[in-house]
Length: 159
Image (cartoon, rainbow, N blue to C red; front, side, top):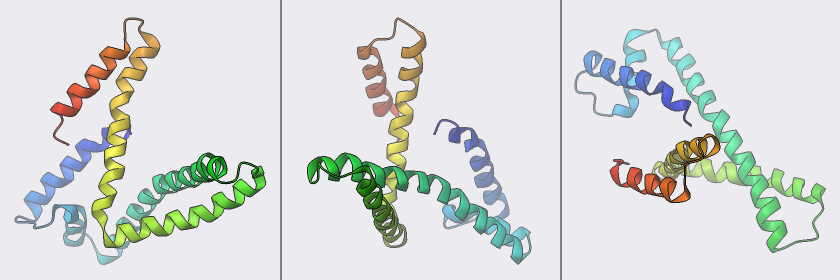
């Protein structure tokens, strides 16, 4: 996630360009697509759409695989079937990939506000990065200091 924040200036640049190219844009989420539609031929919109879909699929695939494996191994096997073999856990994880994908697809189509939880989760993990890095390489870092920094950042941050 910290590497993704490097691209934030590009997102701001697209937003400012949209303000200049399409004054009065009602939906800011469609800024890039509106600029592409006004500036390029129609076939290029397909390339931008495909790139956006692929960009979303890579982290989604990782999250879905991790969630399915965690469910099968750490939840289902521990709670309901402690005698499951690794092969059975693998089969359950494969089924859960399909189930979790369908649930995520449903929420993406019918209720995109639930996807805000994913963004908040990434932001929360990102807040731990400075404490972990400083804790590994600087002996004066304390648990109390890291916790105080997390609380202070969450109170100060607008999200």
